[in-house]
Amino acid sequence: MHYVIFGAGAVGGVVGGLLHRAGVEVTLVARGEHLRAIQDAGLTLDTPDGVLTLDVPAVEGASQVSWTEDTVVLLSVKGQQTEAALEDLAAYAPAGTPVVALQNGVANEPRILRRFARTYAIHVVLPATFLTPGTVVQDSGERPGILDIGRYPTGVDETATAIANDLVKAGFLSEPRPDIMAWKYRKLLNNLGNGINAAITPGASDEEIYARCLAEAEAALDAAGISVVTSEQDRARRAGHITSRGSRNHSSTWQSLARGTGVEIDYLSGEIVLLGRLHGVPTPVNEAIQRAVHDIARTGAEPGSLDGTAFLAGL
Ligand SMILES: NC(=O)C1=CN([C@@H]2O[C@H](COP(=O)(O)OP(=O)(O)OC[C@H]3O[C@@H](n4cnc5c(N)ncnc54)[C@H](OP(=O)(O)O)[C@@H]3O)[C@@H](O)[C@H]2O)C=CC1
Ligand SMILES: CC(C)(CO)C(=O)C(=O)O
Image (cartoon, rainbow, N blue to C red):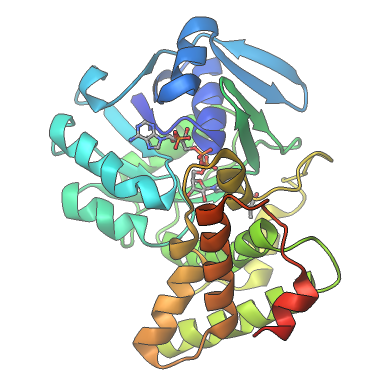
C-alpha cells in the first residue's frame, strides 16, 4: 500500500517516518518551513534510541501526490484543519480512497465520511512533539505508539487489517477493532487534560480541574447514550507499552499554542460542551477551559500561564 500522511507534524511525522523506515511506501504532505526543511535535508526523527534522518518524499498538497488504487490517506492534521485538508483531498484523491482519521476527538470521522465513503478511525495513543521545522520527536520508548483501527462508524474489513499489519511492521501495536469509536470516546476523556495543560500553570489545582471536567463529560456522554470503553480496558491495552520521555510535558494543544497554528479545543473540551448543550447537561468547567485556550490563542499569551486557583475561583 502507498500511504499519504496528510499533515506530517508530531503524529504524522512519527508514523510516516517509521513506516518509511520499515520499507513501506510513504508520501508526506506538509507545508511552509517544515516542508522546505524535509525536502532539503530529510525528516529528522528524534527517537529515544537516537536521531534518524529519513529521506521521505514530501509534497505540499494533494495535487502533488501520485494517486493509485493502493493509496491510503492517514489524516493527521489538527481538528480545526480537517475541513481545509478534506477540501484539498476531495479535489484530487479518487473517491474510493480509504481515508483514516489519525486524530484525537470524534468529530473528524463524520466530516471525512461526508466526502469519502471508505472512512476509518484510529485510536491514537502516541505522545509526540513538533516544535522545530524539519524535526519530530517520538516521545514514547517501549513502543512508539498504539494505533488500533476500525471502520467508521463500526466494523472492520480487509483494509483495516492491512493497515494494522503495516503499522505493526513499523513497530506500533495495532489491532483492528469493530468498536473503535468507543475507544476514541475514552481517549476524548483523557484529552480533556489537553486544554488544562495548555492554559493552566502546572500545580495543585490541576487534579481538581480535571476531575470536574471529567465528571461533566461522563454525565454528558451518559445523557447522550454514547458507548465508551472503561478506563480499566484502556489501561489494560496500554499496559506499560507507552513510556514517556522525561522531556515530554506538553500536550499537542500546548504545542499548537506555542507554534501559533490555531487550536483544536472545540473538538476536545468543546465536544463535551456541545454534547452537554444537546442533552441538557451543564458543562461550565469544560466551557471555561475552552474559552481560556481560545483567549491564549487570540492574544498570544504564554501557554500554561493561567493560575489554577484563580481559574477555579472564577468559575
Ligand atoms: N502530538 C501528540 O502527542 C498527539 C496528537 N494527537 C492528535 O493527532 C492529531 C495531529 O496532531 P499533531 O501531530 O500534534 O499536530 P501537528 O500540528 O504537530 O501536525 C499537523 C501538521 O499538519 C500540517 N497541516 C495542516 N493542514 C495542512 C494542509 N492543508 N496542508 C499541509 N499541511 C497541513 C500542519 O502545518 P501547520 O503547522 O502549518 O499548521 C502540521 O505540520 C490531532 O488530532 C492531535 O490531537 C493524538 C495523540 C498524541
Ligand atoms: C493525551 C496526549 C497528551 C498523549 O500524549 C495527547 O493525546 C495529546 O497530546 O494530544
